[in-house]
Length: 344
Ligand SMILES: *Cc1c(COP(=O)(O)O)cnc(C)c1O
Image 1 (spheres, protein in one colour):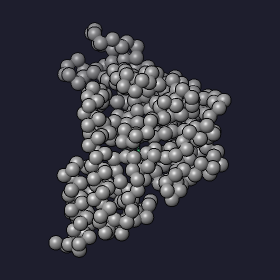
Image 2 (tube, rainbow, N blue to C red):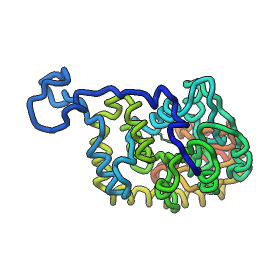
Image 3 (spheres, helix red, strand yellow):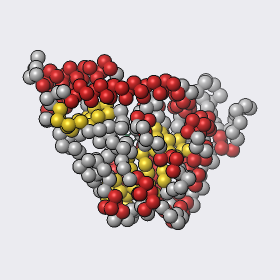
Image 4 (tube, rainbow, N blue to C red):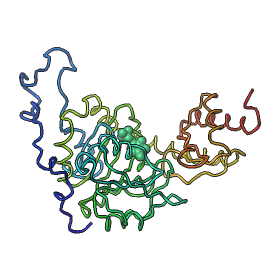
Protein backbone atom coordinates (compact mmCIF):
# COMPACT_ATOMS: atom_id res chain seq x y z
CA UNK A 1 0.00 0.00 0.00
CA UNK A 2 1.36 3.40 -0.99
CA UNK A 3 1.31 6.56 1.16
CA UNK A 4 0.65 4.60 4.32
CA UNK A 5 0.00 6.75 7.37
CA UNK A 6 -0.08 4.30 10.29
CA UNK A 7 -1.76 6.71 12.69
CA UNK A 8 -4.79 6.96 10.41
CA UNK A 9 -5.39 3.19 10.81
CA UNK A 10 -4.89 2.91 14.57
CA UNK A 11 -7.67 3.37 17.13
CA UNK A 12 -7.12 6.78 18.74
CA UNK A 13 -7.25 5.33 22.29
CA UNK A 14 -4.48 2.87 21.42
CA UNK A 15 -2.39 5.50 19.66
CA UNK A 16 -2.63 7.65 22.81
CA UNK A 17 -2.20 4.73 25.23
CA UNK A 18 0.49 5.03 27.87
CA UNK A 19 1.61 1.46 28.53
CA UNK A 20 1.77 -0.10 31.97
CA UNK A 21 5.31 0.19 33.20
CA UNK A 22 6.21 -3.00 35.02
CA UNK A 23 8.87 -3.34 37.70
CA UNK A 24 10.97 -5.24 35.15
CA UNK A 25 10.69 -2.34 32.72
CA UNK A 26 12.31 0.08 35.09
CA UNK A 27 15.24 -2.17 35.87
CA UNK A 28 16.23 -5.03 33.60
CA UNK A 29 19.55 -6.41 34.84
CA UNK A 30 19.96 -10.03 35.93
CA UNK A 31 21.86 -9.53 39.14
CA UNK A 32 20.98 -7.75 42.33
CA UNK A 33 18.65 -7.88 45.28
CA UNK A 34 15.21 -7.75 43.70
CA UNK A 35 12.74 -6.10 46.02
CA UNK A 36 10.84 -4.26 43.29
CA UNK A 37 8.02 -6.51 42.08
CA UNK A 38 6.41 -7.91 45.25
CA UNK A 39 7.61 -11.35 44.26
CA UNK A 40 8.12 -14.09 46.81
CA UNK A 41 11.83 -14.33 47.63
CA UNK A 42 11.63 -18.14 47.93
CA UNK A 43 11.54 -20.84 45.28
CA UNK A 44 12.90 -21.07 41.74
CA UNK A 45 9.83 -20.04 39.82
CA UNK A 46 9.26 -16.94 41.90
CA UNK A 47 10.27 -14.24 39.41
CA UNK A 48 8.22 -12.59 36.70
CA UNK A 49 9.38 -13.44 33.18
CA UNK A 50 11.07 -10.97 30.84
CA UNK A 51 8.15 -8.90 29.51
CA UNK A 52 10.14 -8.15 26.33
CA UNK A 53 11.23 -11.75 25.66
CA UNK A 54 14.67 -10.45 24.75
CA UNK A 55 16.51 -13.77 24.53
CA UNK A 56 13.82 -15.35 22.37
CA UNK A 57 13.59 -12.35 20.05
CA UNK A 58 17.37 -12.32 19.67
CA UNK A 59 17.41 -16.00 18.70
CA UNK A 60 14.57 -15.50 16.21
CA UNK A 61 16.28 -12.43 14.82
CA UNK A 62 19.48 -14.39 14.21
CA UNK A 63 17.69 -17.34 12.64
CA UNK A 64 15.52 -15.30 10.30
CA UNK A 65 17.72 -12.24 9.72
CA UNK A 66 15.00 -9.90 10.91
CA UNK A 67 15.79 -7.05 13.32
CA UNK A 68 14.56 -7.49 16.89
CA UNK A 69 12.39 -4.35 16.63
CA UNK A 70 10.35 -6.07 13.91
CA UNK A 71 9.46 -9.06 16.12
CA UNK A 72 6.55 -9.50 18.54
CA UNK A 73 6.03 -12.59 20.72
CA UNK A 74 2.49 -13.51 21.69
CA UNK A 75 0.70 -16.09 23.79
CA UNK A 76 0.11 -18.09 20.61
CA UNK A 77 -0.92 -16.56 17.27
CA UNK A 78 -4.34 -16.23 18.82
CA UNK A 79 -3.05 -13.37 20.97
CA UNK A 80 -1.62 -11.69 17.88
CA UNK A 81 -5.03 -11.92 16.17
CA UNK A 82 -6.70 -10.46 19.26
CA UNK A 83 -4.19 -7.59 19.33
CA UNK A 84 -4.81 -6.80 15.67
CA UNK A 85 -8.46 -6.15 16.56
CA UNK A 86 -7.59 -4.18 19.69
CA UNK A 87 -5.17 -1.95 17.81
CA UNK A 88 -6.82 -1.43 14.44
CA UNK A 89 -10.57 -2.08 14.76
CA UNK A 90 -13.08 0.23 16.40
CA UNK A 91 -15.92 -1.95 17.78
CA UNK A 92 -19.32 -1.53 16.10
CA UNK A 93 -17.70 0.59 13.39
CA UNK A 94 -14.82 -1.03 11.53
CA UNK A 95 -14.87 -4.09 9.30
CA UNK A 96 -12.42 -6.84 8.40
CA UNK A 97 -12.28 -9.18 5.42
CA UNK A 98 -11.74 -12.92 5.67
CA UNK A 99 -11.69 -15.49 2.87
CA UNK A 100 -13.50 -18.66 3.95
CA UNK A 101 -13.00 -21.51 4.29
CA UNK A 102 -10.20 -20.39 6.55
CA UNK A 103 -8.95 -20.38 10.14
CA UNK A 104 -11.86 -19.85 12.51
CA UNK A 105 -10.18 -17.53 15.01
CA UNK A 106 -10.26 -14.50 12.69
CA UNK A 107 -14.04 -14.49 12.85
CA UNK A 108 -14.40 -15.52 16.52
CA UNK A 109 -12.03 -12.73 17.52
CA UNK A 110 -14.02 -10.27 15.36
CA UNK A 111 -17.19 -11.33 17.18
CA UNK A 112 -15.51 -10.85 20.56
CA UNK A 113 -14.53 -7.33 19.57
CA UNK A 114 -17.88 -6.60 17.93
CA UNK A 115 -16.23 -5.98 14.56
CA UNK A 116 -18.14 -6.74 11.37
CA UNK A 117 -16.78 -9.52 9.17
CA UNK A 118 -17.02 -9.34 5.38
CA UNK A 119 -16.67 -12.81 3.88
CA UNK A 120 -15.14 -13.03 0.42
CA UNK A 121 -15.04 -16.80 -0.19
CA UNK A 122 -12.13 -18.51 -1.89
CA UNK A 123 -12.85 -19.88 -5.38
CA UNK A 124 -13.56 -23.60 -5.97
CA UNK A 125 -9.82 -24.13 -6.35
CA UNK A 126 -9.25 -22.21 -3.07
CA UNK A 127 -7.76 -19.06 -4.57
CA UNK A 128 -8.61 -15.54 -3.44
CA UNK A 129 -11.09 -13.45 -5.35
CA UNK A 130 -8.85 -10.39 -5.51
CA UNK A 131 -11.22 -8.01 -7.33
CA UNK A 132 -13.98 -8.82 -4.89
CA UNK A 133 -11.67 -8.23 -1.90
CA UNK A 134 -10.55 -4.88 -3.30
CA UNK A 135 -14.17 -3.86 -3.85
CA UNK A 136 -14.84 -3.88 -0.09
CA UNK A 137 -13.43 -1.16 2.14
CA UNK A 138 -12.15 -2.63 5.43
CA UNK A 139 -9.56 -1.94 8.11
CA UNK A 140 -7.92 -5.36 7.94
CA UNK A 141 -7.61 -8.31 5.62
CA UNK A 142 -6.69 -11.78 6.92
CA UNK A 143 -4.81 -13.97 4.45
CA UNK A 144 -3.97 -17.48 5.60
CA UNK A 145 -1.22 -18.96 3.46
CA UNK A 146 -0.81 -21.91 3.36
CA UNK A 147 -4.51 -21.87 4.11
CA UNK A 148 -6.23 -23.91 6.80
CA UNK A 149 -8.26 -26.08 6.02
CA UNK A 150 -7.54 -26.24 2.26
CA UNK A 151 -3.76 -26.64 2.70
CA UNK A 152 -2.67 -24.63 -0.34
CA UNK A 153 -0.49 -21.56 -0.51
CA UNK A 154 -2.53 -18.64 -1.86
CA UNK A 155 -1.60 -16.82 -5.08
CA UNK A 156 -1.50 -13.07 -5.73
CA UNK A 157 -0.84 -11.94 -2.16
CA UNK A 158 1.57 -9.32 -3.57
CA UNK A 159 -1.19 -7.70 -5.56
CA UNK A 160 -3.20 -7.31 -2.37
CA UNK A 161 -0.21 -5.85 -0.58
CA UNK A 162 0.07 -3.27 -3.35
CA UNK A 163 -3.58 -2.42 -3.67
CA UNK A 164 -5.53 -3.21 -0.49
CA UNK A 165 -6.17 -0.06 1.52
CA UNK A 166 -5.68 -1.27 5.08
CA UNK A 167 -3.71 -3.70 7.21
CA UNK A 168 -2.87 -7.07 5.60
CA UNK A 169 -2.24 -9.94 8.01
CA UNK A 170 -0.56 -12.94 6.37
CA UNK A 171 -0.88 -15.98 8.64
CA UNK A 172 2.08 -18.27 7.95
CA UNK A 173 1.40 -20.89 10.62
CA UNK A 174 2.33 -23.60 8.08
CA UNK A 175 5.14 -21.82 6.21
CA UNK A 176 7.81 -24.35 7.28
CA UNK A 177 6.01 -27.11 5.38
CA UNK A 178 6.03 -25.12 2.17
CA UNK A 179 8.85 -24.58 -0.31
CA UNK A 180 7.96 -20.92 -0.87
CA UNK A 181 9.61 -17.99 0.84
CA UNK A 182 8.06 -16.20 3.79
CA UNK A 183 6.43 -12.81 3.24
CA UNK A 184 8.67 -11.47 6.00
CA UNK A 185 11.11 -10.67 3.17
CA UNK A 186 8.68 -8.04 1.91
CA UNK A 187 8.24 -6.26 5.24
CA UNK A 188 10.55 -3.35 4.33
CA UNK A 189 8.40 -2.67 1.25
CA UNK A 190 4.98 -2.87 2.90
CA UNK A 191 4.39 -0.85 6.08
CA UNK A 192 0.81 -2.22 6.24
CA UNK A 193 1.96 -5.88 6.38
CA UNK A 194 1.88 -8.13 9.46
CA UNK A 195 3.22 -11.68 9.08
CA UNK A 196 2.20 -14.21 11.75
CA UNK A 197 4.06 -17.42 12.52
CA UNK A 198 3.87 -19.84 15.41
CA UNK A 199 5.78 -22.44 17.42
CA UNK A 200 2.63 -24.59 17.51
CA UNK A 201 3.06 -26.59 14.30
CA UNK A 202 6.47 -27.12 12.68
CA UNK A 203 8.27 -26.41 15.98
CA UNK A 204 6.17 -29.02 17.81
CA UNK A 205 5.33 -26.70 20.70
CA UNK A 206 1.55 -26.29 20.64
CA UNK A 207 1.40 -26.83 24.40
CA UNK A 208 3.70 -23.87 25.04
CA UNK A 209 1.53 -21.21 23.31
CA UNK A 210 4.13 -19.10 21.58
CA UNK A 211 3.16 -17.09 18.50
CA UNK A 212 5.15 -14.56 16.49
CA UNK A 213 4.28 -11.43 14.56
CA UNK A 214 6.70 -9.70 12.18
CA UNK A 215 5.89 -6.13 11.13
CA UNK A 216 7.24 -2.60 10.98
CA UNK A 217 8.90 -1.36 14.18
CA UNK A 218 5.96 1.04 14.62
CA UNK A 219 3.33 -1.73 14.51
CA UNK A 220 5.43 -3.94 16.81
CA UNK A 221 5.67 -1.05 19.30
CA UNK A 222 1.86 -0.75 19.27
CA UNK A 223 1.52 -4.50 19.93
CA UNK A 224 4.05 -4.33 22.74
CA UNK A 225 2.29 -1.53 24.55
CA UNK A 226 -1.17 -3.10 24.11
CA UNK A 227 -0.36 -6.65 25.27
CA UNK A 228 -0.55 -7.76 28.90
CA UNK A 229 2.96 -7.09 30.26
CA UNK A 230 3.88 -10.70 31.10
CA UNK A 231 2.01 -12.33 28.21
CA UNK A 232 4.46 -15.21 27.66
CA UNK A 233 5.55 -17.27 30.66
CA UNK A 234 9.20 -17.90 31.37
CA UNK A 235 8.75 -21.63 30.79
CA UNK A 236 7.23 -21.03 27.38
CA UNK A 237 9.95 -18.58 26.40
CA UNK A 238 12.53 -21.17 27.46
CA UNK A 239 10.85 -23.97 25.53
CA UNK A 240 10.80 -21.86 22.36
CA UNK A 241 14.46 -20.95 22.85
CA UNK A 242 15.35 -24.59 23.36
CA UNK A 243 13.55 -25.53 20.14
CA UNK A 244 15.38 -22.79 18.21
CA UNK A 245 18.71 -24.05 19.53
CA UNK A 246 18.12 -27.36 17.75
CA UNK A 247 17.47 -26.41 14.12
CA UNK A 248 18.50 -29.90 12.89
CA UNK A 249 15.74 -31.48 14.96
CA UNK A 250 13.21 -29.05 13.49
CA UNK A 251 14.43 -29.70 9.94
CA UNK A 252 14.37 -33.47 10.47
CA UNK A 253 10.83 -33.40 11.82
CA UNK A 254 9.57 -31.22 9.01
CA UNK A 255 11.23 -33.47 6.40
CA UNK A 256 9.73 -36.55 8.07
CA UNK A 257 6.25 -35.03 8.08
CA UNK A 258 6.58 -34.07 4.40
CA UNK A 259 7.68 -37.58 3.49
CA UNK A 260 4.81 -39.05 5.46
CA UNK A 261 2.39 -36.62 3.82
CA UNK A 262 3.43 -37.90 0.38
CA UNK A 263 3.03 -41.53 1.49
CA UNK A 264 -0.33 -40.84 3.10
CA UNK A 265 -1.57 -39.08 -0.02
CA UNK A 266 -0.49 -41.98 -2.22
CA UNK A 267 -2.21 -44.57 -0.03
CA UNK A 268 -5.38 -42.50 0.43
CA UNK A 269 -5.71 -42.18 -3.34
CA UNK A 270 -6.19 -45.94 -3.62
CA UNK A 271 -9.15 -46.05 -1.25
CA UNK A 272 -12.67 -46.22 -2.67
CA UNK A 273 -14.01 -43.87 0.06
CA UNK A 274 -11.62 -41.12 -1.09
CA UNK A 275 -12.92 -38.96 -3.92
CA UNK A 276 -10.37 -36.17 -4.02
CA UNK A 277 -7.27 -35.01 -2.16
CA UNK A 278 -6.50 -31.31 -2.37
CA UNK A 279 -2.84 -30.38 -2.92
CA UNK A 280 -1.20 -29.43 0.36
CA UNK A 281 1.63 -27.08 1.34
CA UNK A 282 1.00 -27.84 5.00
CA UNK A 283 1.14 -30.73 7.51
CA UNK A 284 -2.40 -31.87 6.75
CA UNK A 285 -4.54 -33.03 3.84
CA UNK A 286 -8.05 -31.89 2.98
CA UNK A 287 -9.74 -35.01 1.66
CA UNK A 288 -13.10 -35.27 -0.03
CA UNK A 289 -14.72 -38.56 0.91
CA UNK A 290 -17.95 -40.31 0.00
CA UNK A 291 -19.70 -39.31 3.25
CA UNK A 292 -17.72 -37.12 5.64
CA UNK A 293 -20.14 -37.32 8.60
CA UNK A 294 -20.37 -41.12 8.49
CA UNK A 295 -16.64 -41.59 8.01
CA UNK A 296 -15.80 -39.10 10.73
CA UNK A 297 -18.02 -40.92 13.27
CA UNK A 298 -16.74 -44.30 12.16
CA UNK A 299 -13.12 -43.15 12.63
CA UNK A 300 -13.96 -41.79 16.09
CA UNK A 301 -15.40 -45.21 16.97
CA UNK A 302 -12.03 -46.64 15.93
CA UNK A 303 -10.30 -44.05 18.16
CA UNK A 304 -8.90 -42.19 15.16
CA UNK A 305 -9.76 -38.52 15.38
CA UNK A 306 -9.72 -36.37 12.25
CA UNK A 307 -11.39 -33.01 11.69
CA UNK A 308 -14.78 -33.12 10.01
CA UNK A 309 -14.93 -30.10 7.71
CA UNK A 310 -18.21 -31.04 6.03
CA UNK A 311 -19.84 -27.88 7.37
CA UNK A 312 -17.30 -25.71 5.53
CA UNK A 313 -16.24 -27.83 2.54
CA UNK A 314 -18.78 -30.42 1.41
CA UNK A 315 -17.87 -33.99 2.40
CA UNK A 316 -14.34 -33.09 3.38
CA UNK A 317 -12.29 -34.24 6.31
CA UNK A 318 -8.99 -32.69 7.31
CA UNK A 319 -6.32 -35.19 8.24
CA UNK A 320 -3.22 -34.09 10.12
CA UNK A 321 -0.10 -35.99 9.06
CA UNK A 322 0.96 -38.09 12.05
CA UNK A 323 3.81 -40.50 12.66
CA UNK A 324 4.25 -43.38 10.22
CA UNK A 325 2.52 -45.63 12.72
CA UNK A 326 -0.42 -43.28 13.28
CA UNK A 327 -0.92 -42.86 9.55
CA UNK A 328 -0.94 -46.65 9.12
CA UNK A 329 -3.66 -46.97 11.76
CA UNK A 330 -5.76 -44.35 9.98
CA UNK A 331 -5.27 -46.03 6.59
CA UNK A 332 -6.15 -49.47 7.94
CA UNK A 333 -9.32 -48.10 9.53
CA UNK A 334 -10.33 -46.49 6.23
CA UNK A 335 -9.58 -49.72 4.34
CA UNK A 336 -11.80 -51.65 6.72
CA UNK A 337 -14.56 -49.11 6.21
CA UNK A 338 -14.22 -49.49 2.44
CA UNK A 339 -14.40 -53.26 2.73
CA UNK A 340 -17.61 -53.14 4.67
CA UNK A 341 -15.82 -54.44 7.78
CA UNK A 342 -16.72 -51.39 9.82
CA UNK A 343 -18.83 -53.40 12.25
CA UNK A 344 -16.22 -56.05 12.98
C1 LIG B 1 -2.76 -23.73 14.11
C2 LIG B 1 -2.89 -22.39 13.52
C3 LIG B 1 -2.38 -21.26 14.17
C4 LIG B 1 -1.65 -21.41 15.47
O1 LIG B 1 -2.23 -20.71 16.48
P1 LIG B 1 -1.46 -20.67 17.89
O2 LIG B 1 -2.33 -19.78 18.70
O3 LIG B 1 -0.11 -20.06 17.62
O4 LIG B 1 -1.35 -22.06 18.39
C5 LIG B 1 -2.49 -20.03 13.57
N1 LIG B 1 -3.10 -19.90 12.38
C6 LIG B 1 -3.58 -20.96 11.72
C7 LIG B 1 -4.19 -20.77 10.39
C8 LIG B 1 -3.50 -22.22 12.27
O5 LIG B 1 -4.02 -23.27 11.61
